[in-house]
Length: 257
Figure 1 (cartoon, one colour):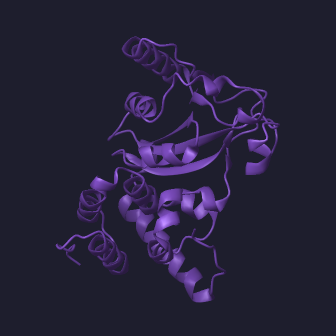
Figure 2: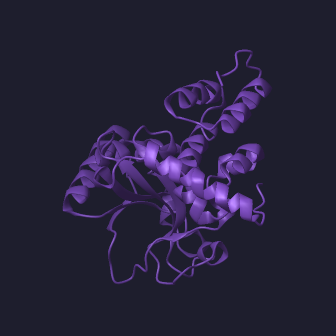
Figure 3: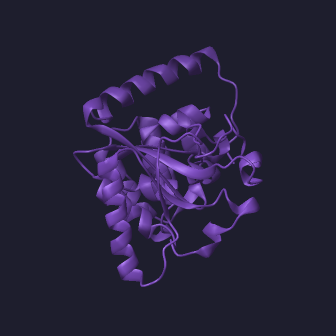
């Protein structure tokens, strides 16, 4: 697992320059960005699934729907706070839609799993769509009905409003939970990205997309990295590390640097 290290003053300057470049060149204008929140059991897999979606520009894992402010993973897993593990994502409305995100949500887990209805220590694992307005509620309900007809089994997924008197908000999970597949296997990439805190990992477009690639089918990782390198303007150092990873995976043809 990637260990967060203290920064030097030079690293802090590099982080600022890098974040400025990524924000100005790769993220769409704010007027095209919207947020959505989903829960489907463990948030690691769901975050990676959304990271692979064209149009999703940022993802974060955290705790949602409970009453306690800034809960820890231990508190949430004990089932005493009312929170569930969830993924909050930011997407470009020009490239994807809420309806499409619902399709990814259904495909990422088994919404008929009765364990999502358990009480006690398992309440932090739930299947839920949190809607922000009436249009999102309508689309979520319609997608649930369609999925129900396809599966021909009872779906236990809840469709809930984002705002309620018992909801204290979305709280980022601890840093080692963010971009789990990227952090757990690719220390060199994490070092190149210069991301140290949970907030920085959650706000990184590059980390979002790379985590999605590494969290997918291992047979698609190399092709995913190739497409990613072509579509994104990457710093030389990151391209070099990606090339090394591909070589380690047995790929003879390296990326153009």
